Length: 93
Image (tube, rainbow, N blue to C red; front, side):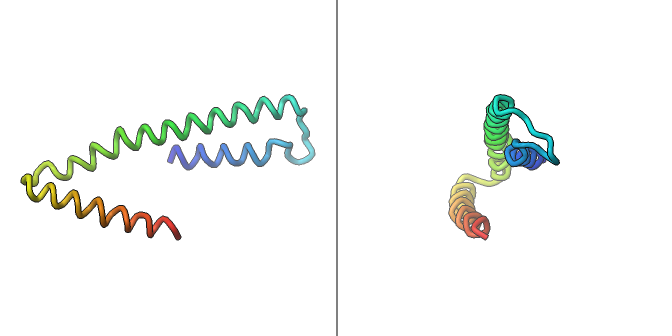
């Protein structure tokens, strides 16, 4: 949700940086705002990636705790291969 709202704010700010409804801003102010918007977008991206790897990966590994060693190895391989291919296919739409 944070990435959705942050991304919307980032792209709206980039689109509307030249002014809205006749309200014009100076070039220096627009340039300063653009730098701030880019830094905020970068911070949002880094936060999103950090939270993905710090929260999603441990939760993904917790699924395999109750399995024995052989089932864990084969289950991980199957899910990693099939899941990544299905994910790539679905994300291409």
